[in-house]
Image: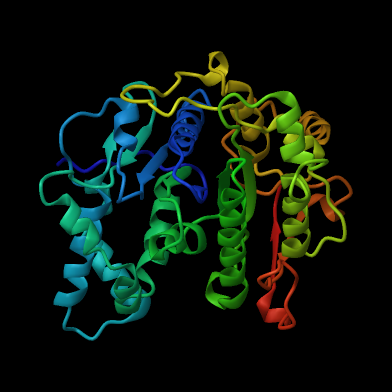
Length: 390
């Protein structure tokens, strides 16, 4: 396969993982639509890479009508594993990771999926008669133990080559999920449904990602969380309101209160409100039998369009979810940047009103206990303080 060399964006790109605890076709559809938007956000387009990390149920390529069998993530990881095993020069750490990535060029495992936009895909792998067996043999624990720096170095290389890298993670909890939610991303878009296990599972994975960032000094990077509620079929306005706010007949508080508490504990804020965010960001039920070519070419005309456009108002420019939509519009107007609605600044935390010196101080991530409260080992090195330019 010819090597693909998309034009790199100015500055480091951002990696965003799309995750749902329960299997949900909306996850891949949301990712694909956001990738389509972002790759055309500027007149020149910003290079976007999608990675299908759901090795158990691969299918992201079907959404773009990409025919044929091509190598992808599974073959790339296998080649890296073979290179690590073959090295006899004693290299370790970052040096070993750089050698492996120089020998196994990951760009050979991606393909363009849109003739008009700089939009690329790394498939889950070549889905042939041996795929299931090869996927079952993919040992993320062993790979991390053999070369802990490999995924970190690959993440850095992808961020240099692409402005946006969107990862389609599998559901549940596993080593692969930990890679996608703890090791790789700068952002997590977490989808959940009215089923209680869906929200509980998402919160558990978010806490695990936060704990990892707080306890590993080499990986204390910003992490923004964007929850995305997905309605069930036939849900009416009353049931949707009860799901969000709680009330008579519900088993507990609504999802907004639960997620506000999680973010308060995670970022060390005494108070935050997600009213404006959830007023705009809530996904309608999407058809589960979506198939080939179902990416809405501009979701404005789709049922999910308003929610996706609203999500991009926050996640597309790296605003915090507790900032109100009115504040975002005011900041955008005051900056006078002339950027289109969905700019190329995907993932950089923007300044909050009242921030000193015109810079945003990224909130401190705090390690969490199983109940979502801050744990007692909150030493300075276990907290994440990152100043980010707007």
